[in-house]
Length: 548
Image (cartoon, rainbow, N blue to C red; front, side, top):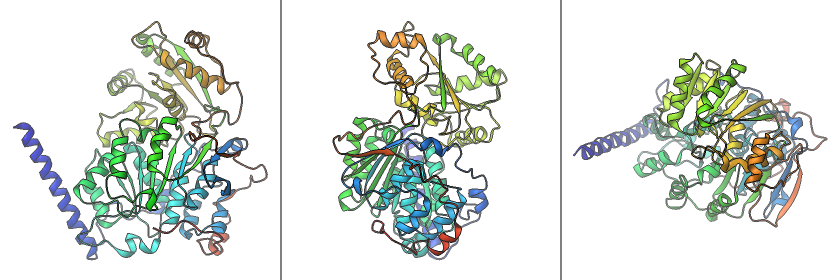
């Protein structure tokens, strides 16, 4: 009876929210402008006021990074040497020139140099590049530039009784990453007819339904809430011409793959054969994930960017061998060594995060936590206080390991080491953001502590450290050799590691430096006159994909 009552309450809430969507759509279609304070009127100051100029990006470190391209048509791709070139080679909306300047984008990163031309040529792409390398701009810029502004919702308006029909969908695994991508979409589409919206769970649905009722052209969403809205009949995928999976390896793991298939293959989204373009981005792309991803893509181009110095050579990695019961004492010693440095502490479980935050706070450490059992407002508040510097320590589960732009993280601590090496790479990538220097400290529980041992990842850890030319603790090396580890990589600098290689094999077109030595001058944000005379699509030498 109690379950039936709860189901009835949920159904009634869902009905009210759906009714709210249709009422608001009727209001907007009849000329309503929307209420103040609902986020409809973003200002330049609110979006770009705290804009950082490519924080952490030291372009000199990109000079010798190899980039692999493979797949049919890869030989025709000409890398982008500067953002200026976009207006010479493609039809690019003029507002993007101004917004790139507002974002202080000076010159493209390696993934941007290759992914943007590939997408503007209309090809599907699977892109593998380390965290903090500019992947978000690499997929948002070509998508926004390919959307037909004459068909934007702000121009044609919403039609009463019709579901919201975005033309571009970006799927992300977490609410925080979803909001971060949405913010970048609003920046790049600022003062344009294109509207961006976000859809994710854990919060009140009405503000999101309000945006959808008004009409959005580009939606960033988590799979669960998007499926829910599709089931409610308030949004359709029928007009989607661009699909992006960010952090694609995680999106296609055991937890997310069924939801992705439901949205992409079992509803009304056009297939890749019908012209939908699909872009996938991640810092790691294991072969098994690539095989899963191929089901969602047509013949795609692989873009793999070598990591800067293997596993982030700007991060000094150290390990402390300690039994499980000695971790907390070891943690306080580490924190006391650098008590004012912004520190991100990773743990394995939600309850560990809550417990650790409480203990640290009790000892006077200015700490907050972020994990899956927290309400979305609480998670956002914790992230905000840590980003602003009001809190020095953030205790987090892997919800903070993927894709989040958390600037100025000096120190990453793996209180609990992850169970796979890809997660380790993602975690330490929160510091030393391509040019900035940081360090990572990991607590390693030896094999003698069978219940809590980290021996399952020791071989991969040693391989990562040796590949990056970093010192390997003797205890780890001994344990790795006991498990049959054989040194296969030699220490080296610059472009030493890859998050994945094209699993199709045998069709690599080239492996080259990502940045030519003779093109180190600034592009993008400068040269304003060109943006007004030859930019904005007015001086087009190339063609983008068909407008959706």
